[in-house]
Image (tube, rainbow, N blue to C red; front, side, top):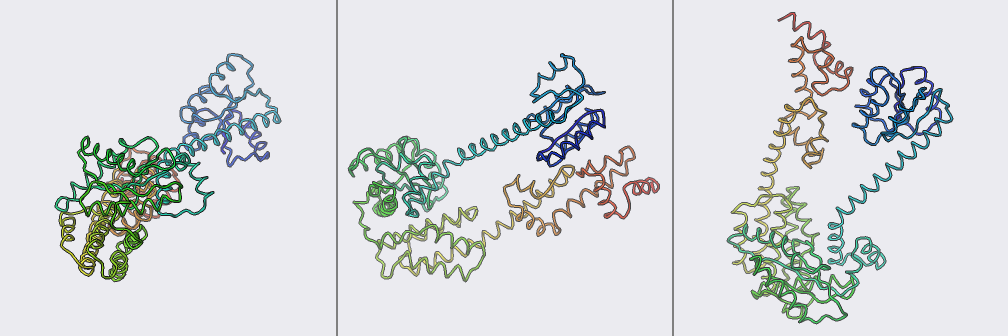
Length: 528
């Protein structure tokens, strides 16, 4: 907490400073000013929390000082002191959020009481502001937290009933989870000859599907699949009722939105812990729907029953393991990871039904890796998916998948290199345009959403020198030009290129050029 004391009587400023400092009220710094003009200058960089100001001062009185400071610091708390008993001054002061009015000669214990009250007000305002920020953050993050929680439940990651109850209550999902539910998996049949069109259709599906769901239903994005968790009244919803409702949703999507979607409906879940089973059943039903070219398939109608079929659905962990290999560019490790993945998705002596399912899984994983790697798909990269339809053995699928991912490593590396060049070029342009600002890697990180470490590495690799060295070089070159203009005061030159401290600027300039700024100017003018 910061305190600024403003009084044109220096002795009063010093005595109050010593007294307040001895009270140990939690001020990290106490500054003084002997005029309103000086107080306004200090306020620009110091930004106090509490202001103690005399009303009667030369040039700018206390009332105007308060008024102008509140423009910069609307939350500033003010205590007025004055030896003037004129009611008009008191009345003027009360136009502003002034905490108290203390008469001179200042009774120090009284000042202590006023300060304590003011500090409490500042601390309470801070606490309220932090609570409001937390509440706003929570409300903003709520949909994402709900989706993450439900996504984890879909994968059966929770076993603690008390934890599920408390978390669902916090996230506003307890009413939903206390009703019978059903997981439905929705997809858009891919057109191998036009994957871009399919991707756009799927994006549109994500936008319009909520319009066709009931108020208590939830839409979730998990494992690159769109899921709808539907809620029903009553203890035993009939399978026919469930399929009819979702059939109606699919018809509306096609009729009103021109989107032909395919869905797999799982088994009813009467408790939160049965949702994972409903999800697995829905995935199997979706696979069979695609195989049979059907619009809708329920878990009870699937031909791919049994544990073996369920185990062929690849989890996010398997995809992230592949992504880790791709990021590292470790081809041998990537091949080992692919071999393990293929053995999971295609059991030995697999029949054509499971080979069809394997092609579906490999397509899903391949597209998901393209998205997660930030790779811009080329026509060649996507049209390769059409080759899957002609592959009828586990070995052929493994070879196809391996070659595609090795190709993806090369494409991702090239695109990252191109992005690095663009980022470094943009940073150098910003430095030359904004050298007078308080620039840092953190500033650019905030503006680009890249990490500081990434920007530092990219800049050094692409430009050939560290960011700070390049920035200093740019500023010093500009300083040399400014010092050649005798009309510009030397005291302003440092501030014009981004150095707030004149002493630091002078030391840095001497280190850079071997002479002081004034000596440099004298020499430059003499040589001219």
